[in-house]
Every structure is written in C-alpha cells, then in structure tokens.
Length: 89
Image (cartoon, rainbow, N blue to C red):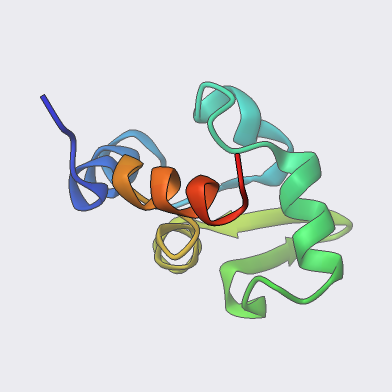
C-alpha cells in the first residue's frame, strides 16, 4: 500500500503540537526529521524564517509553516528510483 505525501504530512500535523521546542523535534517525529539537520538548513536560509519563533534563546517551531516547507523536501519512491537511475546507480 502506497502512502501519499499528503497523508504523511496530515499525520505529522495531527501528531505535532501547534508550537514546540526545536530541540524536541527528533523525539516528536520519531527521528523522521532531525533537529541538527534543520538547524543546518536554517543557517543556510533554506527554511523560511516564519517557521520559527523565539523564547529567549530557545528556538520554537511553528508546526504549520514548518510542515508546508517540509512537504517540499518529500518525494515518493518512483521519483527516487528515476533520480538514482539518472546518476548511474
């Protein structure tokens, strides 16, 4: 059974609170999204700044804008196979 990207994003939206500490991202997503990788992408300005708010020095994630961005990083298996074939794998 193939799971669509939309259903994966909807499940994440249902599982995550509207705002949460970035440091808890790994645990909240079952390591599907890793905070250290998000921090790297954030430092390269690959993630829209409206995905984050701050409480003192603590970085908080705004779920809905973050998941909108995260959805753009997902691909279904057939695209992966094509990409690997294009690279001679």
